[in-house]
Image (cartoon, rainbow, N blue to C red; front, side, top):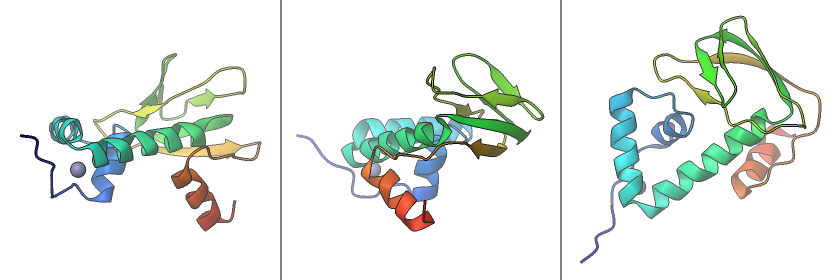
Length: 124
Ligand SMILES: [Zn+2]
């Protein structure tokens, strides 16, 4: 017999989990819930895609905290130089919040329904 979860984490926890910015214990809880819940697993996947899309073709200056991708870890003062020749999926280190200044030189083209909705809401 398979049961489906009836109570889900709030949106802020899903966003934190998608950006890997939550406490490791909360990350374990969220990963376990997502393994059991198709709905939340799908939402986290969409949020991860939106986050990756927002960082594509952008330069980011880390103001506080840190983020990492497959190439490096960026800390306060570092510039993560992203361009069209390579793809990045940055993650915020879980130990602290990360604040970045992101400069986008091209038009964002969201690939997901959520991304298109966020672009519409923001007027992009
Ligand atoms: Zn759920």
